[in-house]
Length: 173
Image (cartoon, rainbow, N blue to C red; front, side, top):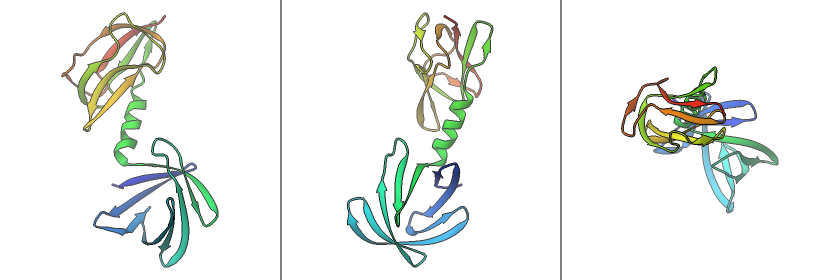
């Protein structure tokens, strides 16, 4: 399993590295020897990559897309780890199903209900957080997929839930 996933444009690169030897990394199965030569400025560094010297400038934004400048070329990149990628996939899969005027919010993965954010009778907009579950040691706010009114909350804090369990039912406004 890769340690990081780096997305450049629409291509993903799996990056693995040995934590005790940070100068050895593997990208999509290809080994690279990286040596930090010097810090030129706060975000500008000189590296040797497989014995080829290059200058890399980092404009990092850990909450979104970062930009890396390498020898005059710039790349917009997103860096994530495998756990965050899986969580994103599961949460996107949790979009509730619509059945007539009833909408359901389902658990994207097995987990533990932490707390309710919305209560029965509350009106929610699309994207509003409704319930928090803990999965894979991370808390995840599950959000309403459409505007509606909370009709039923089918789980209580502290309750374990399975993948695809219906957590909340909504009524259309």
